[in-house]
Amino acid sequence: SYANGTWIGTLPEELQDSSFLAEQCIARARSTKCMFKLELGPSGQYASRGNVCIFPQEPGPLATCLPPPLTELHDEICVILVGSPKTEVTIDKLTKTPLLIRRSRINEALKWLKLHNPLYSDLDLCAMESNAASYPEHGIPIPLQSIIRTNANSEGSSYTQQ
Image 1 (cartoon, rainbow, N blue to C red):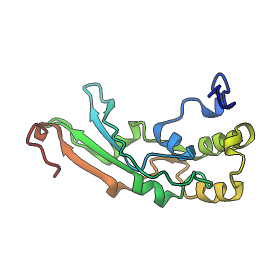
Image 2: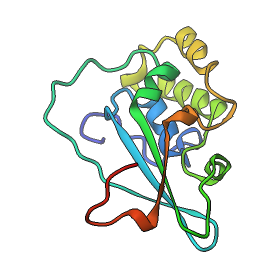
Image 3: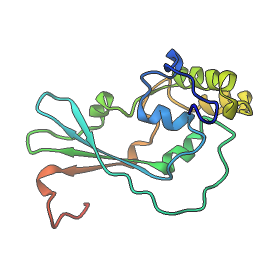
């Protein structure tokens, strides 16, 4: 922000148009759990909606190694796909969601932040490249077993996850 001397004005190209997961990969502090609920609309495009709930907690130290190891990201992200009777929920539908990342974009963003943001100046570039190598070149960085399938018709006041 402007008050602490980190205002950069217009976002540089390296940081523009990042997906939610890409932002999580470059953030020094992240929420501990994120849940996505994606619903397939009539045009075949997913809509995302959800809630964020933050409880009082002892903040841990800021991450010094970014992007986080892929196993750490697996523990923080959950995806729920909601289908309808006419639309089967399949894994390939995720290719149209805001959960995609590009390894090269994450690397470019972190290198820019290290050079231009004093709060990122202590990042270890060797660790960054090592961790980034485990990420897909382009795709979804979370394991498929983290995805829960559900049906929009079964949701309601008495809904329980199946």
